[in-house]
Every structure is written in structure tokens, then in C-alpha cells.
Amino acid sequence: MESAAARQPAAEGVLDLRQPPRRAVPLVVASPHSGADYPEEFLSSARLDPLTLRRSEDSFVDEIFAAAPELGAPLIAARFPRAYLDANREAWELDPTMFADVLPPFVNHRSPRVRMGLGTIARVVASGEEIYARKLRFAEARWRVDTLYHPYHHALRRLVDETETAFGGYLLIDCHSMPSATATASLARRASSRRRASFWRSEISRWRSMRPMPAASRPAITATRGAAAMRCRSRSTAHFTWTNAATGENPGSIGCSAR
Image (cartoon, rainbow, N blue to C red):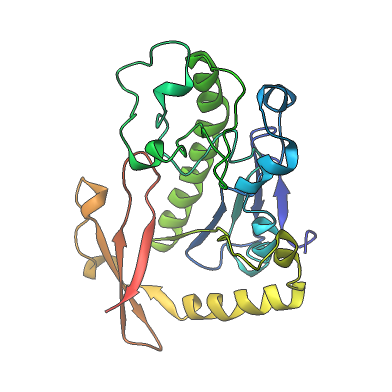
């Protein structure tokens, strides 16, 4: 319910941030691909109609996970569309064939995602159609990264840092939808508020059964966060281990798995 959670349009036009009344669980929920605010200049430069451009969206995923703040976890959702800028990439995964000028040497143009046409600035939509009717300039890509990508990731980093400080660790849940030959976008909206809340309550209750171990019994956290491991004890199901799954420029996402 919107009344229960504080909804903040943080970084104007970039993302929605919904904070819980109280942080109750070591979770951060992110929806990077549900944005649907299409800039006019983007629509005018595209060779595809708006409906086709939306094939890259994870439509309504932020609504499916909207119960998270009610249950004690913050929810961050990008407002910009994935076809315009993909926040689930390195900052500079760019395809040189899309640009009229030469790209700087720091650009990663060899990644598998760039080869598929799905870099930070995508060449194609999820269904494979080419997006642009013209070549882009690198200045356009830099503007999108500076005004959208970095503010989104800075906000996400703040959330995970705050959660780690409060609980001694965190689990970042990155929320997506997957294509299906039989599903339509409207299916995402059919889950009632009660069913969404029921799903979250079952997941959250499992996490509430866990508590961080006393600081003196945690392993030392090394300077490289990628090697960090913190153990949590569950009151109901033996032991869990937190391991850092961060790669590249993406913020650290900590996965928790039973051992």
C-alpha cells in the first residue's frame, strides 16, 4: 500500500525509491528494467514504434514487488526504459557500429552482450529489431550514463550500504520477467495485492528467522569485498553463508545460500 511506504521520486525522472517505515529484513529489492518513461528525442530517433520498443521492458515488475516496503525492505525501480539505457550492464558496454565517432579506449566493446546488440545502449530490442534510424554520437551515450546510469547505481549503492550497516550483510534481489511464447504483458498485472503480499510474507518470514552472528564470531572482512564472507545463523534451518557476487561495475550483490 502506498500509504504504508514512503515513495520518493529520487533523482528526478531517473528512479522511484520506496522506503519501508522500518528496515525489518536485510533485503534490497531492485527493478532495473520496468521503466517506461520514453524521452521524445529517443522516440524520434528510433525506427521502431513505441509498442515495439516496449518489448525490451520487464513491464509491471515493480508493481509485482510493490509489497516489499510494507514488509520492511526498500524497493528501487528505474523510470527510464531498458531500450534507452540498460542499468544492468557495465557503464560502458557499447557497440562501435552504432556510433558515428570513434569510441574511447575504455569502452568495453567485446562483451557477449554487446555482440548480441544488448549493451548499455542497446542496438536491438529484445525481439531482435534494430532500434535506431541513425548513428549515435558518443556524447549522447555519455549523457545517458552520467544522468541515468550513475544516479541509479549511486542510489542502489546507498541502499545496500545502509542495509549492510544495519544487519551485517544484505541480499540484493534484482527483479525481472522472462519472455514466454504464451504469456502476455497483462499477465504480470493479474497477481492481486493479496497474492503479492502473501508471496513476500513467506519470503520475508524466512529472512526474519535469521540474525547476524555476534561481530566477534564473524570472519574478518578483507579489503577486497569480493572475498568477503559473513556467516549468519538461522533459528530455524541450520546455517547460511553470505558470499559476495559482485562483478565489474555492478554494485555488490550478496547471495545467501544454505550449506
